[in-house]
Structure formats: structure tokens, C-alpha cells
Length: 62
Image (cartoon, rainbow, N blue to C red; front, side, top):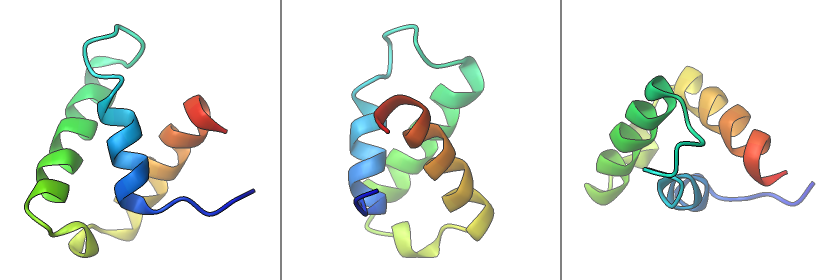
């Protein structure tokens, strides 16, 4: 599988906000990560957050 940057994964998932495809928890998680992305702080997210992001991204974009 091709490597996708953390920022790209967040951007793609942000595009799904409001579509009804994401659960309430997933929407909140994506909104939180998007705020972190916009603040330029994605390098500070935890390994657990990265794992959750990758799982969520792979569910919709793999």
C-alpha cells in the first residue's frame, strides 16, 4: 500500500464531515485532528491517535 501522509489522511477525512458516513465519535476525532493540522502541530499527536487515524482512513480510502 502506498504511504499517505498524516496531513493527507486528515484532509481526506475532513472532506467526509457532514456526510453522515462517519459516526459521531469519528466526526469529533476528525474535527480535533483537523484543528491540530491547521495549527501545524500534527507531529505532536500520540501514537494511539495515529493508529486510530490510519484505521479510519483505511476504512474509507484503502
